[in-house]
Image 1 (cartoon, one colour):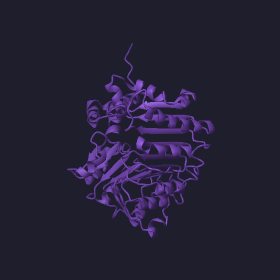
Image 2: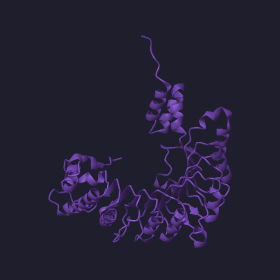
Image 3: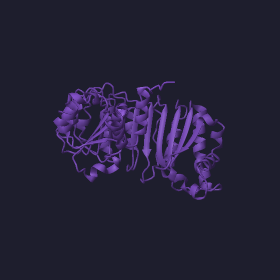
Image 4: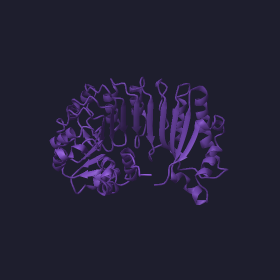
Length: 396
């Protein structure tokens, strides 16, 4: 029987999977066989990092620069020449995300590069003082903008997004400076007709500045996804106001409080979010009461999925541990009340490897840990396995 060659689509998929964790592997595949080229190039050119060499340590903070996840471009002008070459036109379809790092990159050159890469949907700016980027505009294919540790000034941002009416999500994170003058941010004159998601990181911004940004974007937009990270904030006043600004349209809300910050004594009131369907909360057990109170505010609502990422610090793992029984018992009763009075379909509890290391030290594993957790949640067991999923995130 004659040999039947594998379909090219299958070869592309195989190469993409084989090279998922390493650009070096993808580059080797591209050199090994011409049939591997498409899958390899898709991996190599998917993420482009544009920054001057050598990279500053500040640019590498938080894993922003990762040689295994993207291709480093140290000369933006050579990159423009490369992608402008007729022999390389077939590569223009592969880049999906461009990360621009540092202030020593020419804005005009970056605009020209992104103008060539018309399949790029995400632009991330890291440690960019957003001065002089008014010309960074007219990119209708960009759907997602991420500012990490940047300086945002209203006039510059307004000029940048002119013509970028396809933007769907905006994320502001890190130690970001925000011009918070009310006469600027409250004018709310920007036009994002497709904007549906906002992500704000209160860790790097002053509460007042973050609140102004929230009002700026949420004032006239029907945002249905809101993600807020709070690491150093001492109260939830600004947090609550941002939620209230989008309460009428909010369908999914994500809170992250997994930091060593003061214990919150107040909850986030979600009762006005009548369209809320999905809630995700990442927290330590130090902020557990705030989580319970927030969950309680969603009773009699149509929340269908709740994801809770718990980083357990205080608990000592013992079958007779009274604190663990109270801890998970309280969660059990609150979730059970939501499920009985609302439309809850799924509860997922995520734990980290660090949470179960004591169990592993005692010769036990993931399954024993989960059985231990479930033993304190009798009400949830009565709702059926379909509603209660618990997982452990594998160790890196």
